[in-house]
Length: 115
Length: 116
Image (cartoon, rainbow over all chains, first blue to last red):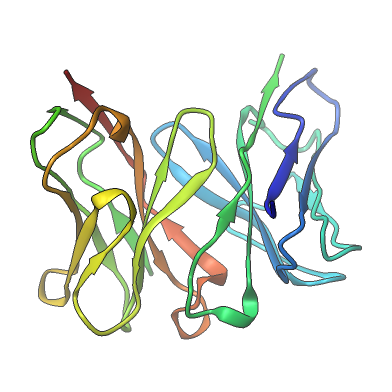
């Protein structure tokens, strides 16, 4: 079955360490997104990519970096510059050629805790 | 600026009772509107969407929503709630080019609890 796979599901990090969250999709979607979810704040867009080798900052990109070397993969690195990285991170994708569907497909998320 | 407001942070209903979750949006043009549901520790699943046409839209799991332009609202309803509906519900508006979903703006969510 097609879908989005995020790993790891749980991750613990010491302050000052960079960590990379994996997101892989086999839906053949062009566009991929990273959201951060905090209690009571909904989902906030970190980065998005509409095509390979191109990505755009979202609303809260500071302290994060991404790459899009392959269509299937959109890893997110949480750097030591991110002041409050403890959160639930969600990856999503959409078939850009079918904008009328509007359906974002989400992975199951990665929970990052900074110790 | 585009925004979405879900005024109810937490709602508790009895199983079998009706449900209405509120959503108000701010968007200059005709919005693309969505409702997503999230079970604990999981990703989000699309319940329904409105792009144009009939203002009453049907979704999965027996949910429906009505777009009211005059009230800038897109409230989610279900006539009879089941215990499995307990989850967090997010309203979202598509705020990208042409209202496309390359930049979905989400509300803060409403957590639904269902009493037996």
